[in-house]
Length: 231
Image (cartoon, rainbow, N blue to C red):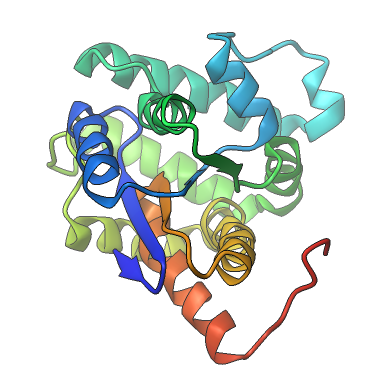
């Protein structure tokens, strides 16, 4: 998706198609800056092929609910990655490798993962817990499934539908994992765009963030917000 000097690509973190698309766009756009949906901690872990620390001591740093979400999320990603034979996060690593290989500026734009997980622990409500248990029960006994190929980036209408359902059924999870991070990443991208108006920026994020981030960036431009380079 194009906007001003930005090309924003929504990807799947376990898709070979996404890796190919990143290479094709990089070749065609020849960006001056590459931005990725990573914070420093996840960037270092992926770059060094380290496994995330899942020790119980993390409970004291990010809260029990945030810790459980991290453990379950890691397990699910690894399982899906094994099915499609693509390491989770390969899309981000590909963008990082291209930036380094071509000696262009690399920007890490995501919120610190520990802050996100702390917010998850804080906002995940009892109502949402009961809803989640009910959904798991129904999925197990009634085999409710969403039909799409996990090796590819889902169509935009499917992504929109899934995000809308998340927003309705799990508003706090939606806020922490989608909206709050959309706002954080959009503000960082906005600053990069404003201070590099003549440079091409290529940004790679999960497909679920694409439309929300573009909307937020457009709002920031229409509000005539200005940032000091060091702010």
